[in-house]
Length: 320
Image 1 (tube, rainbow, N blue to C red):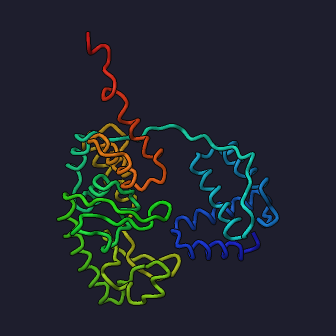
Image 2: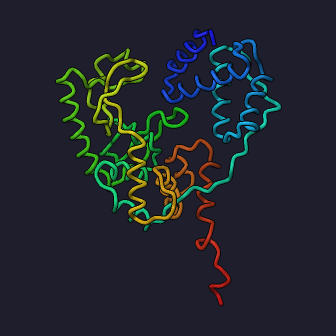
Image 3: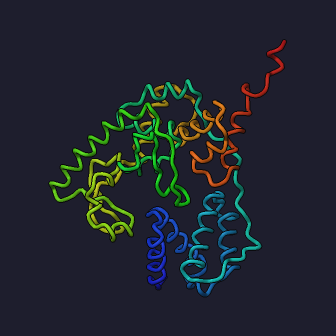
């Protein structure tokens, strides 16, 4: 690209807004692809038509999914509006990638029981929060010690999707195991402090204002990794949380042992949480808040899951 200052400006603005590292990587990746697509011209030399051409190329020639095209669009809107301080993009000829209408995979209550019968230890504790509190896997693994309120039986989800905080419920079934887990975290943390480690990665503003906070137990991950890893932003070594791949692998193996024929992942448990709450008569607005959905239409998909098959229509062969 020849102009590293552009990427530095993007990184600086993303970090100023406390966006996640994954978002940073994704946005920079899309800007690099956009610039290369137009012959390495600087974005200041490009405009609405060039943005449309690139996004239409993704949809029509690369056949990317709707979510991938939306991510690319978000990256370019961020580039022009927040980094380059240009007027808002006017994309009148944008061709949207088609979003397939797939219903989410949902476990029955009996299938959920069988799945948990084949999980144990840390994998079972995390799976209980996915199914019992409706958390996304990333939200579950990013929980800090201070985010668990045993007295009020609730969980604080910090900077969830859309950078929004929300409160979800803390299942009774998870309380004892979580207390034991926090005791383990405390012992691990005390050992780290003796080694001169044990400093968590804090939001930038807090790290500057409260320099000793990073060493406090309340900021440690509830599900820490057994190994230290290097933070790509600060360059400091710390304990990150356990990997998403490890949890998904455990859940898939448990589903296979339970002889569940459906394609099961960590996100399946979140889908099942929402569907079973609606099945039990809870208000859809309440479910929307617990899931952290911005739009009610997103939550409405679970009503379609309830309204299919034998749960909704009586087959004519059954009345013969």
